[in-house]
Length: 480
Image (cartoon, rainbow, N blue to C red; front, side):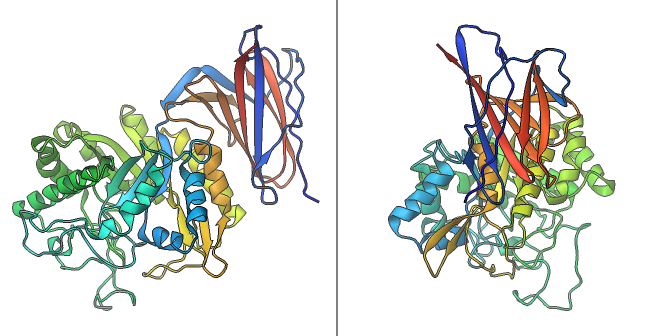
């Protein structure tokens, strides 16, 4: 017998209008019941002397939310090909329909990343500084149909691109990877490196060619009616990886944007945004100096819309948001996991999203939306995904992280504002949607059922939530 959970709400007059009706929707997710529409609640009056745990400050607004998404990777498209067309369509609907996950902003690699089938770039013709041989021919076979299938349900889908590696001939080692391992051809005796040098060839003609490469990428995708609205200039510029990667010293990356990429966009009429990212280090030591040097350079900052963070970048976002509250901030990649797709890991992803929102993020990305079940990447890594495709049964598995993402992306609409919360705040978040709906997310990290008293204006809401659960409350006012 399926176990259900009761959420009891005590609430009256919250919106201050006697001629309208208040409706409440409550969704609870646990390991046993991952998406439960709970209609077993009561609305009754309360007294103002009731105590509360947290207060939603409806007049204290924080950042505006731009949207949610994941990354289009080649291995995700290949997994989808295992399905019948109707089932494949249902998967896209689940991710992109406004009635489901409602992903509106998504990432893609510019050339190969670690979840491509193998290495490639959009121009591997050495010395082609004029980009005469630039092309997206390979992308027409995988990434472009992947994106266009999503656009059936989200026609205005916004895409941002980031390279894991430039064309290999633009690197000092002439090779896509940085760190040797058994999955690439680098000399295994080479030392492991992380920071303190730049792998990109820094002469003017190579930097100019790379700026043109970005321009051509954006225009080629727009010619395919895919709206690339932004680029993040380098994925993890301080990480020397056995898969496509390229180290950049902070000063060199800043100067490249200031002296080459920004002017190239301006001179070629490219209106796409430039983001400094994806930043994967804490605000500490040399990395703090890198960010301060960037933020203090007004000439480069005229080109930069925002900063993207992933992995250890979670320890940098707070300081950067405090220094430059005008900058857009994005959580560019949920941490990847180990392929087991557990509920415990999903709860961790919820907490990770809370951390980014509490420190100013405007948008949040998952990583792999879709993968074949138990797949190991060509560079030797098993990772989690929102959805797994079972290759033997040709069935679809909605993993726990799918439901965690849906708690955010379905209920919090683009243009929503985050609301401040006072009191004994734990893992609660509150938002007001453009249509006036109030959205409150709660996470019970303990194994036992918990009661939380929430104050909104002068009224109260008592919520009993099961152990190890994620919950979304939507409060809407409807005219009688």
